[in-house]
Length: 263
Length: 266
Image (cartoon, each protein chain N blue to C red):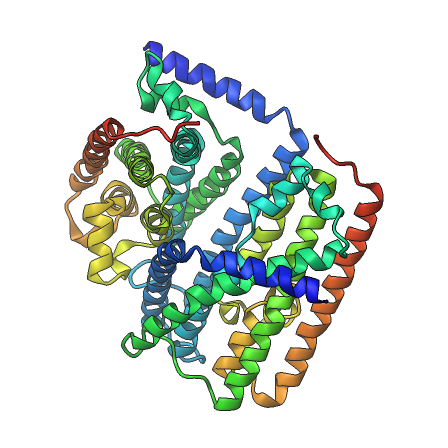
């Protein structure tokens, strides 16, 4: 176990080195957030919805703040498979799935924490109707934090499946693009899932993509009341377990039929 | 003329190259289709829930989306060498070889790569454009067709200029700067919707600094018969020329930046 933890810590420290790059990312994400909020404000002016505007702006800011948790991948890790240098990792006395899982998770966690903290402060300082609102209640905040943690476990499992499939196709761009593009739409990044037609929501909130950030955000804004929280967290946990199991299966099969590229 | 022939020839070669890996190509094209389809889906769902955005109705919104999408992805498809490949050339020092050849750096960069996967996005954009003009009952005239052609052309040139801006940053700082993305990709996302939705600072940014509004939206609004800011009709034909101006300025800066280029060696 301690080996995986130190893999996690190593990647974490590496991510901390790129604080300069994070600044550019923050400005970019703030910009996208402002644009989206401006559009929703104009839309609400024309036809207010049952859901308050502040819930939508909060949704937008939380999505932007944790953007890096969902959309970040490490081309170096992926390239290891194409170039064959994965062979070195195979020599390690470790279970490869766990090793990569820890690495991916560290990158996602640190990448998003570095960006989320300043962005959320910025969003909180924006005037009423533009920025992020306070959580529905203190327990709601705690539950949302649990939700984000589960979301992180879930998205790392998804990413690791993409890695696993890369062993078969060698070119990760195809599989990754297919995975991620559904993610853009159904994780609520382009349009908050709360604004999808009500009849769709019953289905899309059950998809794995909704488990990443949509569930924690709904817990934060109180869209899911505290009574519904156990159910929501359970769905997250079930998806995480299922995706990890699938990933483990793919990786195990891969190792049996692996042909190392290059020399 | 010779340059154009060279460019077309290398585009043809690039296309043939990409088709050498049909499975990967198809998967990536499909992914692009899903991605751009998802963006269009967001607009459709917004219309479904909110009906309209200020004075702009469903058809208008699809039309604006389509104009932006077609223009942006045409530029990305044919200008791939400038936006995708150029930063890598600077970082690896490959640019040195370009400087030795008897052609302009921009010409060579343009010939360097092409991204035919973007045809999927262009198809989605065209569909949105057609749908929008049907729904908004646009009466097409020669003038309107001309305005649309000019908008796509000038918008494309302006976006190519913005891609050069990335090149300028890279030459000066070697590492690619995410900040430029806020203007190019942020501009694309923001200006999929009519500009008058935004607060003043954003409007100024996309009218004066990166004139998406002047090159694309002013003609689009003219075609829809709802002139932007109530400007006269002739503005729809004059304002897109700002794209040429901004490209010229950025090209001069690019030339200047090249003089400061220091090879990374290796």
